[in-house]
Image (tube, rainbow, N blue to C red; front, side, top):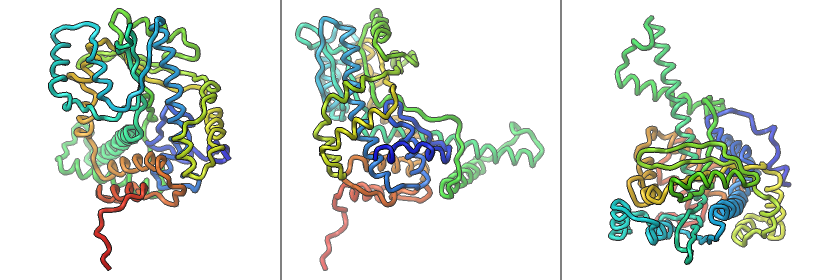
Length: 419
């Protein structure tokens, strides 16, 4: 059964599109990539209802288990004298822990904490946060780091954003090709072509329409390079600058661990970003029984409770050997800036949403499609005869609101029947 659903890899590569997106924290990521590509062409299979449910929910379970174990190894190596972890569900707990016991103080730190204390409601404190805080100290009250799994809605949003960016690049390339054609017809170099703004807009609209038509007719949409997401599983480590090399030494000693990328950020936010290739202990992870939440969800989808553990084990054992994990290391003051200061994470998300370069119907439909993909996996629906979103159609937000309500069996806002 598992092989029938997951391992027909000869079927994956029917088209190469801008949506070739790999979530490198997941298992069976090429299967998920194929599903996203097919759904962009409105190609849904009878097995997709079960497929997407396993891909999202089993991966979420796997990520949460290997992330916890990986963090234990990291913080255990950094603090052999001892540390503890505490699970949290909202950002308030992280921000409060960060300001509770500053390891040192200066004017800027005092200013940040004072501002936060005056108006904690201004700091997005109720934002959901699926994570663990790590503490050390005699009373285990000094925050030294955290880990989190990106929520399904944020993952859908990020995946859509990356696909939209790639689609936008493809549309611009097509529009520029139209301008090249005009320059050739006029017998002048491309750089000497003067195009009125309204004509440039018309060329972009024409290029967009042709790309949408390619999707509708099932024609390949070419785009340079693939798309990767490495930060579904993320770890933050708080270390002062003179101790940050100790993290590299700990990672170097861990079995199945290799730093694959290192990027130093400077400016508003100063930190080092690491992408680590990590080989989890599969059998250790599978020694834990599957949690009741996943068992219950899979039961609603028709899988008997006694089969869920076996299905999860098969999913893990037939997946990739290694995954990617993002690790961000910064000192205390920079961590404070990222949570309640000049580069607060939530504010960055708000700005990103407000400054999207491409916001056409196609962009919105990609957002709807990706949100629906992940939302479906969390629902109790067993069948998926047809997708409610076609990228070439036009919808108002009200339509998609009703799509989600129907998915979760929530009554619509329609007037009651008085007949």
